[in-house]
Image 1 (cartoon, helix red, strand yellow):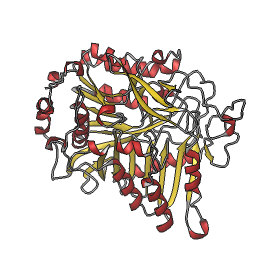
Image 2 (spheres, helix red, strand yellow):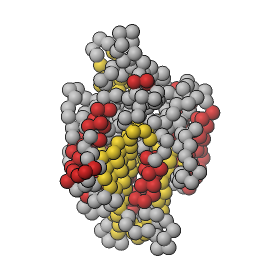
Image 3 (cartoon, one colour):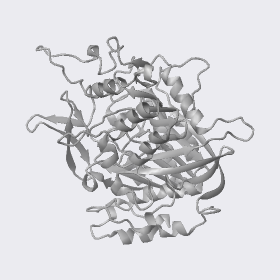
Image 4 (tube, helix red, strand yellow):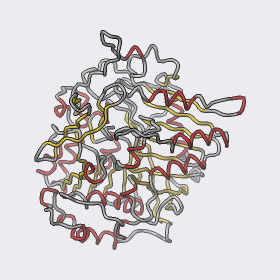
Length: 516
């Protein structure tokens, strides 16, 4: 079956969705290991996986979960039939960005493991994005030359966004979802968080339906079907989660998706999953995301978008839920975000039991100045007293309405029978607490001495006239066009250069849609 799927170059404009469906439809006739409509009879294991940037250190007793490099290596080592990857772009060697560094060795090893899949008779399928940020990378060409099947999905055409999802499916029974791009910097220079679930074909096959929706539109002039054929539908969602045994204890699990146009019948929208989790929390809500904007980010004209902001404020004010936000700040952050964070934190009023705290997580650049677009906390998760959410999207309107992403939602109220393993929520809360209490988490009012955060005046160089200058962006994929006052994201579809107009932020710095 797998060998019949062709690469995107062989998909002609005449190929229709029905033709593509026929290639994969046998998958859903196979055993699904379901006892009932939503009870999976497999015993699955869950692990958190992290990338902690080089030179970032916690205390001796701090818990650090399995390194992402090890988790990816283990997934590839157990693969015996197939590996499916959906990712924004691929850039697993320093050579891609003209950087000579030993810290790309893990990325090179991961790429080599993918190359070796061909000799092991393991089929590799990659869905990647148009637009993309890796026009100089040869990774996907190398994989195709070794028999991998690659399709570049034109989300610029389909939704005016990008494919920002980061997921793996191995042998239709192991999965990874997390913040990490297929980028060597995600293994050594960027702080990432994700989850691996082993031995859960029920969940893997549900996640595959999302991958299939990307794959089947990876041909020229594709259009999004409305409605989606039944084959893409799911019965697992917010109202009917999949009942699993994870680490020896029961759990309720489902996968959310975005944008809405890529949510077939039954699929909970990513935004709805997050808002529902916020609304159902009783005690606390901890959020760790790279960017937080109650607005549109990449589309003109800018619009106010308070969906998440209002949900957090309402929870703090009406139900007295403790809110903590850990937002990333680095040299490329848009300072326009800072007032929104200050506004949200201003809601806090202890005499009325209203608690909203916001901190910035700043990764020191140190002696890694030669590596562009690194040294940042790239996490995208939330944990409450009720559930854990691990996603692939930043928190602004574009990520939920035009950009492809997924969220893994898990509610586990019992520990394992022998009490030796924490619940998923407890594990994720432990990560948040560790970061929140670390020396890298800074209160909003303490930025004047932090040159690695763009919100700090010290970090923002000024012109002779006193105006703020944009931070120089070595090795990036954007250019600023002064003629039409727009930014052009330069990308390639493998044959010709394309340019996608995206926004310029408040301080004149180009911001590519879905870039991180």
